[in-house]
Amino acid sequence: MNQLSMLCLLITSSLILAFAAVPAAFAHAHPKTIVPAPDSVGPAPSKISITFSEAVEPKFSSIKLTNMDGKSADPEASAPVPGDPATITLAVPSLPPGTYVVHHCCPK
Image (cartoon, rainbow, N blue to C red; front, side, top):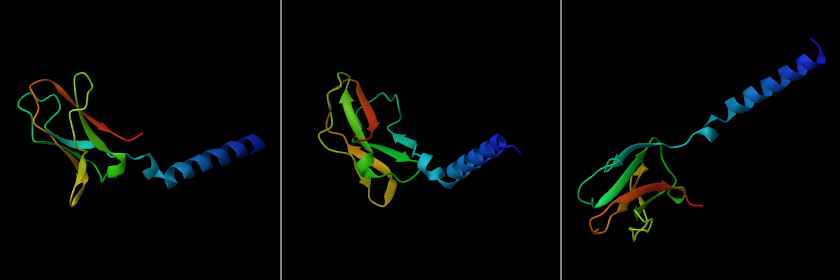
C-alpha cells in the first residue's frame, strides 16, 4: 500500500470509530403522543401533554400556547409529569373562542 492509501484507510477507520462510539450524541427525543391531537378542532382542553420517545430534560423542553397573533395564551410554564420523565404537560386556562397554536420548544 502506498502512503496515500494508508492515510485514507486511517482517516476512514478513525471516522467509523468516532461515529460508532457516540451514537447517543445524535439521538433526540421525538413526540410519540400529543393530546389534544395536532389540528384538533373543538373546545379548549384543560391541559396539553406531549409524550416523547424517551425521557426529556425539563429545562431543555417546554410547551407554549399562543394565539394566531403569536401572543402567549399560557400564564403558567409547562412541567414534567411526576413518575413519567418522557411526558410534559401544560395547564390551559379558560380561553375565548379562537385559533391557538401549540409549540414544543427548547430554551435559547
